[in-house]
Amino acid sequence: MKFFDSNLKIETQIARGSKSFEPVTGAVSTPVFQSACFRHAALYESTGFDYSRAANPTRQVLENTMAILEHGKYCLAFSTGMGAISAIIKIFAPGDHIIVSQDLYGGTYRLFTGYYEHYGFAFSFIDTSDFTQIEAAVQPQTKGLFIETPSNPMMKISDISRCADFIHKRGGLLITDNTFCTPYFQNPLDLGSDFVIHSGTKYLGGHNDTLSGFIVHSNDTYKDNLLNIQMSEGACLSPFDAWLTIRGIKTLALRMKKHQENAAVIAQWLAAHSKVEKVFWTGFENHPQYELSRRQMRGHNGMISFYFKEESCVASLLKKVKLILFAESLGGVESLITYPLVQTHSDIPDDMRRAAGINERLVRLSVGIENADDIIMDLEQAIN
Picture 1: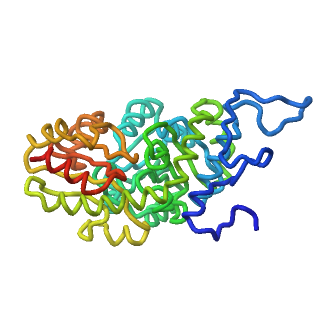
Picture 2 (picture 1 turned 135 degrees about the horizontal axis):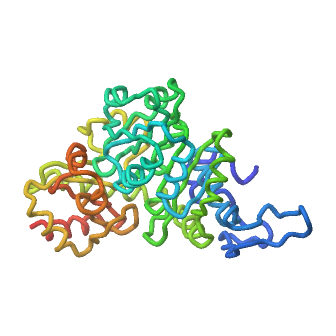
Picture 3 (picture 1 turned 180 degrees about the vertical axis):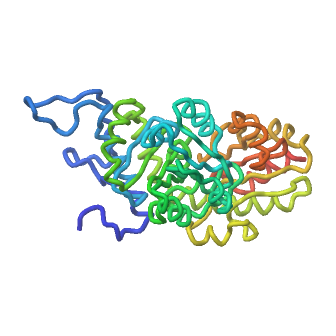
């Protein structure tokens, strides 16, 4: 049997990646090819590696691993998730219109409206979990649909298959940000998405020690164009950061199980707390898209958002947490707490934030892999 077999279980694919060992030396850990350039044996003779901006052996192992895990043919690794998103927008042309999830990371909104609108692209931001809004947003120039599912920070779920069918009938493309679910819990390409985006900084890396981003796809039409964009812009992932992400992915299955297990306990505790008004977690049976989540997801992550009843509780919580860290990220082994209104979503206009549900009383919690009782103890002392 060849090392990679599509019949292998997802846990095995995650732990072993695209290359079980380095074939020349037998090294079990992928070597860090910390080289900017590579020697040619003679004119027109190449090892397949010329310059690390175009291709690097360490990055290639990671890209092949992500292609396997997302059931795609191709993957490109970028220095950040925003680098990946910036690259994918360039497959469209000025004058094209793209429908985008309203409830999305604020940096994506900033990139689209602060930069790409100046180059002639048009964007409509709507609640893509409500299909009637997608239908109403279509214009003659609509060429793309960009969704986050689950969304950040309100944990809304968009129907990937339905979105794919809808945009494909109009000759457009579906791009799905799968950062929150990871390929362990969801595979958008299997559901009809044309491209999958990841901020590998989050759950994939998993240790809050590196930045990375990915585009995964199986579309031969765009393969060379995206490769050229990656090489020309130069936002490619460095060899060492690629190695850190490879190492992080090896424990993804274990970590996602623990994130989900902890989140289930903590979400229930928060929902019963007298100072909490509402909790948003995709694993709740009363979640508006719970049945959809059962169809397109294999589980739930460690992301929880919640409203306090009183705004004054927010500052107290953020100041008093000890075990949980007040920091602007998610998906790592450490529990992190974030205030979307002034951190991750500060660049989104106030009316759009409020329409999405982001207000002064909203807090987002990225549940880590610590003991759930310890996380609850910290929340208890900080809230009370």
